[in-house]
Length: 60
Figure 1 (tube, rainbow, N blue to C red):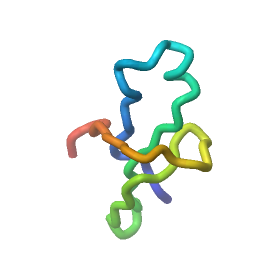
Figure 2 (cartoon, rainbow, N blue to C red; figure 1 turned 180 degrees about the horizontal axis):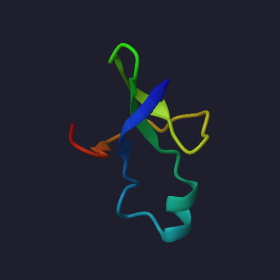
Figure 3 (cartoon, rainbow, N blue to C red; figure 1 turned 90 degrees about the vertical axis):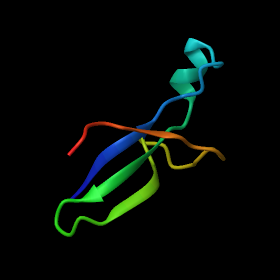
């Protein structure tokens, strides 16, 4: 099972409506083996934006 550990914040310069449409990415960690996979689609989006900056959801 993959669990999100970091989620991208939309750019500050976007309007409220644009932020709702922005395709965010997340970093996920496998609960079985601990492998971290970066840059996965978030919010059900299948395509990605060019530059991504994720923010930790919680500290371990």
